[in-house]
Image 1 (cartoon, rainbow, N blue to C red):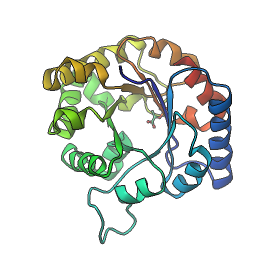
Image 2 (tube, rainbow, N blue to C red):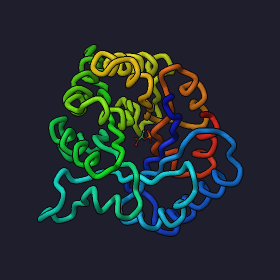
Image 3 (cartoon, protein in one colour):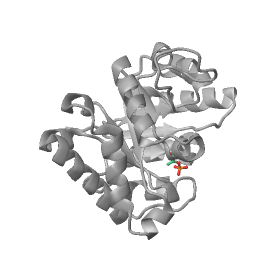
Image 4 (tube, helix red, strand yellow):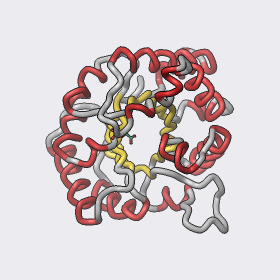
Length: 253
Ligand code: PEP
């Protein structure tokens, strides 16, 4: 059965003391008070991977993720981080294809397919982010954009490799804007994503793939989103920076 997951994407936020406090507060609460089954993933800035690993390491159910990775194994790529480096400091997961990477760094589906391959070859779980822009939604292109991002970025994988992935549906118009997709809008796309996975890999892989929703998830809207049958958790940006808010979102799962 697929996992329920609350992933926090800290983006390029927090100074070192703030990162330490936030990771400590979440770990303390999760390990001592949380009774549920949801897993937690913290996608933190690369300079904080070791630090956060030292805080969360050894606590069951709480995992560390990179926010980006280079597609090559190593070499002359100043400023980049390899999958082996990320794994070597304790990460088990990595975001791939976040809309900010697609938009500001020109990452396209073909490049993201290579990054996914590199992560899988290194034993890291890719969290593959897909989602349409406002312009694409208004032009009625949402499902077509989702289909091409999913198929061009990930459907080259054999079934056992695809089965390792987590997919995150993040409508670009809802990220960091305070505007959330309604539970019905999100469910429609999540069900479509699952149907595409089923068409490519069959019902078992589709039923076992966790598909997270991202885009202004907050304590006030999390429960309604997570109640949808094809939404298996959240990829949370802004609200993951405040321990009480992120904890409420985990509880909503
Ligand atoms: C994100 O960064 O993936 C995200 C969904 O951000 P926010 O929750 O702030 O919209």
